Image (tube, rainbow, N blue to C red; front, top):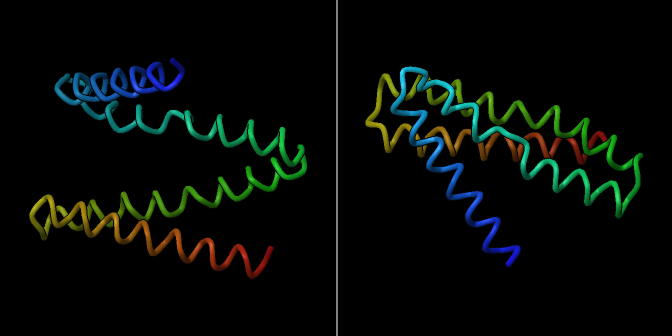
Length: 111
């Protein structure tokens, strides 16, 4: 039953994004996927398994993890002016992957 409920919530979020994308406030569709659903789960699991100290470390890493998303947004902003949309999206995702890899690499060296 829990899995069905999660799937229903996910479907409702997708429908809400679709509705918002068609509204006069279409830009809010970019905010809805950033609701910290998975972050809440991750933070709860880290805190209960590893303690508050590990949660604090996870939170700091999460703050740095905003950078790959920012890199995705910036690269997509540039790419949509020069590429077809599917190629621009795929290229921006690749930029996110590279930025995330760099973040993880640097984090593991310095932490």
